[in-house]
Length: 190
Image 1 (cartoon, helix red, strand yellow):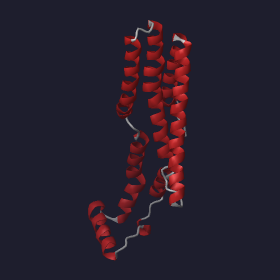
Image 2 (cartoon, rainbow, N blue to C red):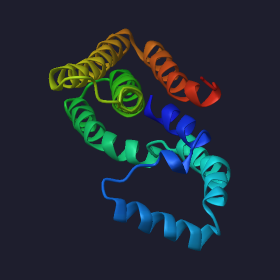
Image 3 (cartoon, helix red, strand yellow):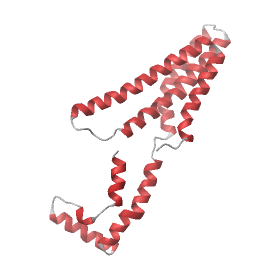
Image 4 (cartoon, rainbow, N blue to C red):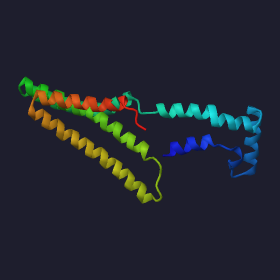
């Protein structure tokens, strides 16, 4: 992971190992560092200490905000709400409409789809480092997309099964989806 390498490099930072393509640039940067920090040793200590700590806090907190995931799910929720309104307008029984609301609209389109978004963003972040060749990078992207597609398809199948089984199964699917979505917030994974 690039972030692990970044923090390791910052921990062992040595200004003498820093390279510039032009010697003028190197001298300019070193002069600026000496003006701002007093000497290069103070800058090295700043990079190894406070700067590294501040960046690690920012990176650990970096995640896609829930509000963005919510925005992404709105199209899917609106589509399933349209189907729910069709069921209601056609005179479907209340338990059928409620089952569809719980399993498909709320369970799948809202919570499960948000889970798949978080999963795909995690995979993109985890496998962000480019591979050796362009073909391998394309294959890696296709595999991440395939994981997302399998997860979305699984959610669709499970929500349909819950919807057809009734209100109790729809509530169980909804509960399991909410639990699965919030489970990573409870666990601290390495």
